[in-house]
Length: 231
Image (cartoon, rainbow, N blue to C red; front, side, top):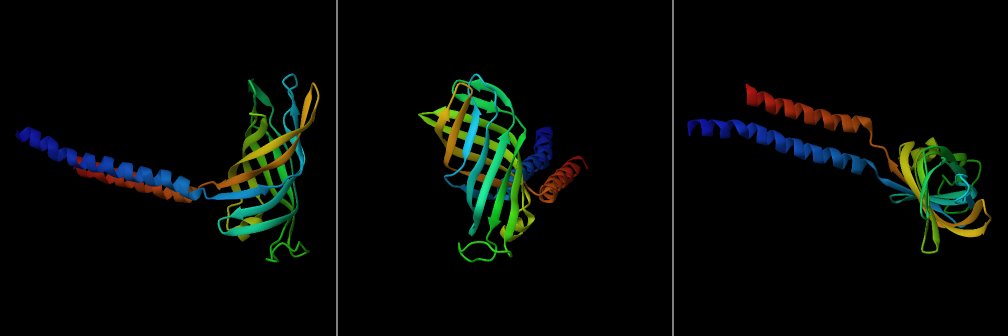
């Protein structure tokens, strides 16, 4: 019985350590979720997308896709003359009505952001002109389902530093897009679609310093508990 009591007593620090690891682990996971606040770029109804048919491996590309507004929390920035041009990575595989494309390709959003709160009256020389965002595709997919075609993709982007400053966002984010496409014409090699709506969503990459501090706290607490157990 004495040996059993000794085992129980000696196991308490280990239980406490496990509990602390679970709690801090949950905090670490939450930090990733918390750090990834969502910003959305609204897509209008202009621009075209083209991609190869089943017999042609041409990757999706597009020109003149209308970008209308950037929404981040309670903040909103109107985009004037906003246009996105892009090309994804190469075709990697197909599965029925789905086409998968790998890493590669890029996109650019150019236009003007109204930076001085004139509420949709347009841009002048004091506003932010030029390249608003650039990005590299991590993957992409064209899905044909229920008479509707959808382009979805994941990407890594760089936001214009002036825009990121106004919205209090990091300049580098991961993100995703989803666009609804409407076929305008096609032939045996290519399909040409119009963009009828959709969005780009940005999620801030967690700051390394924040993650490091939480990870360091986890290691220190674990070491402290184990020290108490063995001393």
